[in-house]
Length: 391
Image 1: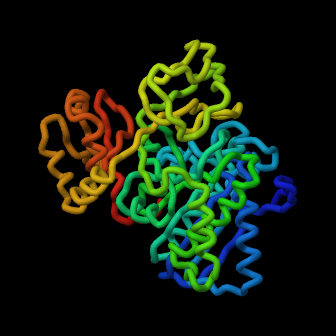
Image 2: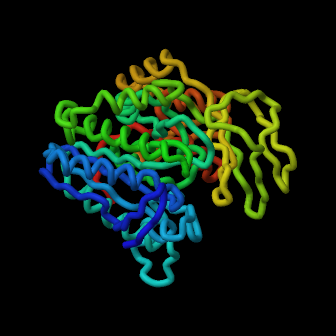
Image 3: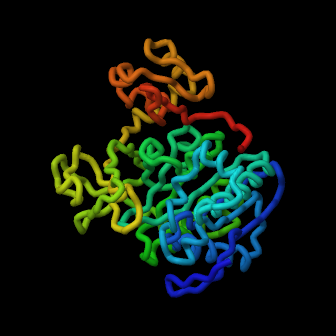
């Protein structure tokens, strides 16, 4: 339990911000706030939502949990203490963590407790489970969603008038949402705006109400002001309903001093060769391709300098969905240089020459994202999965 002061409010925070059990087979919504300790807007939005639920005496139709992420970092108003808590969620690191009792770092302590809580929630419920990770960014931005590219995630995302960014799991190692998606569950990340912008609280509030409706916790009629929340998002958001894909990431090296040039905004159009940042190692950093700037780093902590994204056409999305539903992705396995992993049925082992010949876009089309390079082979992981036991 900690007490924080932000947005002209003071609040005592526990690990559980809310916990409502309705039935084992009812739909379940899990909200995560503050996995980064300097992102506080979601806390105050959740409190406003809970206050309205209580004042209107609304009856839940689904199970609802709201969790706090990095309590230690929140108490110090830092993104993290030793390491980013949202970069630790790999099968290997979690397996190691289960056998570790002493010498835990602050983030490992947080992760171990969170893992136990999340595992318990997923084992307790048999209905559809939705996991929503609430964030803000260091630069000004129109709100947006990030998802792993599964058909289930896409279908859920189109309920909201928001731009959607695919493929972040190819560029960020160990985020919580990618781990959740490994078990076939729906998981989306929501970025409400800039960290210190009071508007981010209001945007989070409207988004949470819409999520409560589209996960089956409440009906539109029950909350009464659903249309007002939807109109609020519509009014504030650019690129409504458009899908984007990450094509490039500038990763900050250990010991590198990195500084974005001032004035850039999220989704801002940039041209190839345009100067974007300065580095103590690489000097002036220029855009390697034309596209839109995504999540430029304007804070001291973090090793993702910036990303570049490009828009995906609706035709590509529709055709991709059709091919996946027809299981036509199986044809990849018969091509030379590609074979299915004997350990994981969702993984393809690909010869680098084959990957270059087909290009990543082909694998993306069929729902495969590059995971890692191992023994001079590329491992592509399928994002559409059956529900499996959480472990």
